[in-house]
Image (cartoon, rainbow, N blue to C red):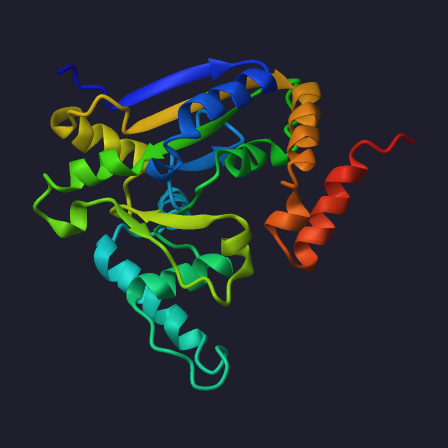
Length: 256
């Protein structure tokens, strides 16, 4: 069987993207998770990965990654003592990372959603200055990742899905959210390239990159259609920040 672990598809119209999503993912939705990004050239890297890279560029000493990450998490645990309410439940390491991710901590986690349309919203939500831009939605095949992981002996090298406790996290519920975790200085797409190219034998791509090329007119069209599907900042972020972000994005069309 021919190995196929990565594919890139290109679209220039919302209707074409919607048709592709409906045809490919409507019957296999549980097999995939999605992530939208405003630039197609961006790798799938965590905020902690970017923090370390930026620190090194600005002169930080190159120390061992493992103790640095452990110290970073320990510092967060110390700083949040007494701020989680009365009798807070015990949490695993990944649950601490997930909590920190929610409140802006640089973590090794990367946000994903079970909905390709929510991912599409995040791809188009930010306003780019260029007259043309290349937004993208990544689709990660969970079944394919499971197959790849089954052939990796070292647990630390596997791609892990982290599903946090959602009872007290309305955003995770609204975004149909979950996280991925790979070794800190790796990207998800780099991980797939490193491991899947020699180990993955399924007929479906382990990772798909769906690129949407267009200008600001396409962005407005996409956001308008998604709002009709009730996908907007005020529903994805069901709090005061979401309401404010929704008002800001609506104000972009205000004519002075």
